[in-house]
Length: 235
Image 1 (cartoon, rainbow, N blue to C red):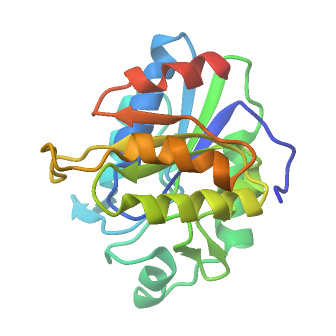
Image 2 (image 1 turned 30 degrees about the horizontal axis):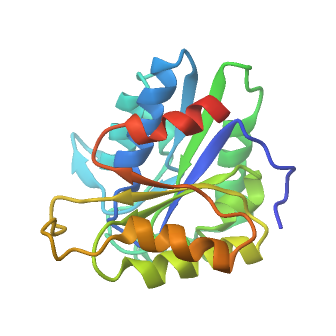
């Protein structure tokens, strides 16, 4: 169960796997907030696979999030923990001679993100990898939602094979008592779009009510923010 009471003033963006479009969706959500006269606080607490430019580790996702949010906060605030190795965060930390603990390293970042929110502000916290991928030595990515009490958005690729991973993720969130506001089906450039592609939207819409008592909406997402408008109006 969540450490905090559920708070609609933002979302944790989770995914069924890595590379399915969390940052694209998070950036679109930030821009939509701005378009609706709201102020996004974006966070990518930890990012791996960073490149070095001018002696600094540059987090590509963190940079994109900061830009989408209008550059209101420093990159250090948006993405404070950065590793070069492109693997799960705790393994990257170990390879680079560090340890990564949720309570010590990540909880303070989340506490600051949620502190002193104005009525116009919304928080967007993007995970690092799939929702059950390791985030720290002692936590999975889903811990971001458990700790903050924020509702979640689940991003999944709109391709063959996505049904099992998506339904498994939904059941996992439901068992943990984590509120799921929406499932975003993201058609990536590498995903086929021919007539033989599965209708994941119809299948998920059919199966979700059979698996969980609260069936979240399934939204198609094609690299724009239009499908997220309903979430903004509810926030």
